[in-house]
Structure formats: C-alpha cells, structure tokens
Image 1 (cartoon, one colour):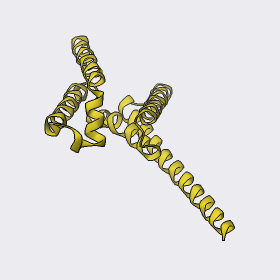
Image 2 (tube, helix red, strand yellow):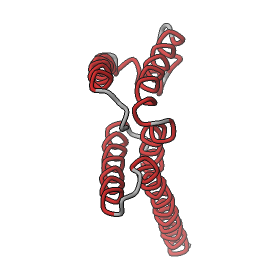
Image 3 (cartoon, one colour):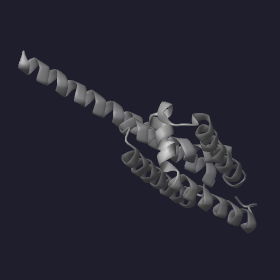
Length: 155
C-alpha cells in the first residue's frame, strides 16, 4: 500500500463507480442469472458479463491490496452471509456489516499493536468466518434439539 499512487486510486475508484452503476442498473438480470438461469435469454452472455466485471474488480484491487487481502474481502463476508441466509437483501446487509466490522477491528489492531495491516485484516476476516461457523453450528444444534423436543412432546 505504501507504493500505491493517487492516480491509480483515482482510476480504480472511477471504474468501481461505473461498475456499481452497471450492476445496479442490471441487477434484475444478475439476480435472475443466479436464481433462475434457464429463464434468462442469453444466459452465457450475462454469465460472461458477471465474470468480466469480477475480473476487472480483481485486476484493479490486487496491485493495491494484494491477492490474499483482496480475496479475503471479496469472499469471506459473502461466505459468512450464506451461512445464515439465502435471501439477497439480508445477505448483502450481513456481508457488508461483518466485512466492515472485521475491517475496523483489523485496522485498529494493526494500529494499536504495530502490526502489518494486510495480514492483520486477513486474520480478522478469518476469525470472523470461524466465529460465524461456530455460531451457525450452535444455532443449528439448538434448533435441532428444539425440534426433537417438540416431536417427543407430540408422541
């Protein structure tokens, strides 16, 4: 991050804004691609657009943040969200919230303990994922126990 120039940041931000607008305008097509691809005409074209935009995001962020940090931010919040919901709006809200909280914790830890920011952020993201998996197991186990209890009461 020390060697990143302001022109690179400006170009990256500009292109990201264009991609956000593009994905917002075309969100119905991308949601259909994920949920019911067989009903979408030109499925391969929309698949190509989705992966092309993902590639642009990756190509632009890797020189700034590095491979591991970039993929941690791209994948871990989404993976955490899918542990708890399959609905779009709650998944986006949960992913953004967890990602933001892990980022703040990582940056604060990096600053407070004089640690390198990249590995600290990746570790915080990983800790958030492990914590989410433990929470998911506890919630699943509790709901399973409650269902067994209700079934035994009915018999």
